[in-house]
Length: 350
Image (tube, rainbow, N blue to C red; front, side, top):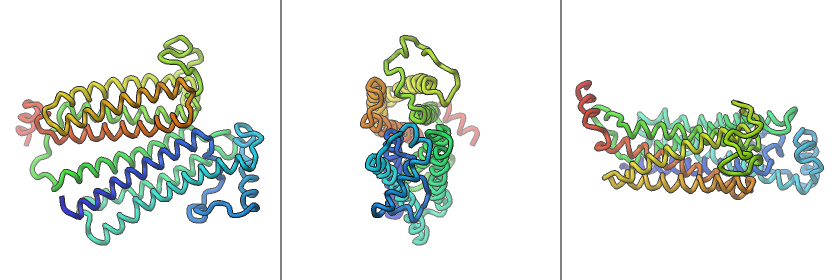
């Protein structure tokens, strides 16, 4: 790998870490119901928090006018408001920092000619997606400032989904740069395990998005038992494909999460039996990450989502996602995992 590729790869890894930190901070703001404490969007001036008693009083009075302050946080004091404000301010500050991490190095690498010509446009997607993420974040916050007592779960999940896209792109491209020079010749055929890994990746993302609906509806605060809900497989009060009902969102998340965990553990077991050391390590990492995530998920549910466990569960989900990306990447880059029939068929087509 060239020095330029190593520098770009370090930037991509730093970008993925920054996204992960911002996601965890966003999870904290959700768990503490602090995401609506700042009722204005000032991308530049908002970097500074209120200065002095007058500015704090103005921010406090602005918050008291929204529905959340009159319901969920009814009777909130200035001191309690300041705690919420600092959580959300930290989240927004980290989001701004994420934008700088993704944008400034890209421009610097571009101007210095350190990015491969074929990679310049695609890597430029990262700062653009981050800019869109900031706008989407404010669009989400706006949904809870006038009529609703909380943000729209649909907008919350859209905000989460775009962050996950940025994370996946950064991790995948970092791994790809780690391969060294681009391969020459025909593109190798996609093996069965690679396809299965892509299904596992899609299932993992869907599971995380379904968890976003649980967070958006406070679905983790109902039916805090496992494996049954209310003593039944299908819980009382289930409303079908509803994305705003806490019972339904928790039920959907359980079914999707359990199915995804089984699939990923099967993939991990197959990789662990591989003769390729790097693929075997990827399978082991995936299996451990899934088991930890399942344990954290059950504990978080049984204890009615304490903030510490809720944040740990979200962070662990990112570890699972990273392990799945690594699995797919290793499967794609391990020739012997492709069947002889697939290789012959590919050669005949070439």
